[in-house]
Image (tube, rainbow, N blue to C red; front, side):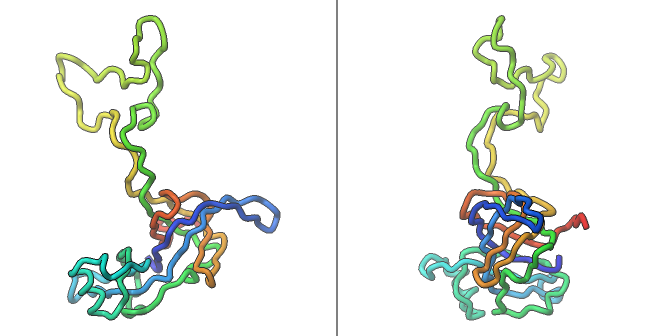
Length: 212
């Protein structure tokens, strides 16, 4: 990973390219982020930088975190994330990372937490098909159906797709194109959708599987 930044999902819009083609975009408030800590191979066993985003009132920060921020003379931040960059020597504690770290045309991966759907049935959660609605099916047309054999193996295998909690999971959308960067307002527009509702925090970093 060469670069990364923390952001907040603003919402979706559409932009137009040179030929007038509509591009569906997600607008993300990316930064400004501050480098809170540098981790080194000698001290921590690996090389990384810890980045903070979003101001928070000091009274809402617990004592260990408050001391963590006070030690490096950085205002408390709401979100902390680590980035294992190839060149951490280019950053120092207190440095500011802004949206212009990315440029139009870059390919990025966006990681966030998907929308929580609560408890859902097998049809919505796993795209099961309905049973027939008549001729003896009874009131179970949307149920999961047979669980498998009876005498052997006499149990339900682990991993069986069943109703349960849906959403609220860490999801990464890969290979999204950066369409526009507004450095003055710290906004990045990426092509396509990203995980989470409006206002959700996301992480943007270089594409791992760059299609280019």
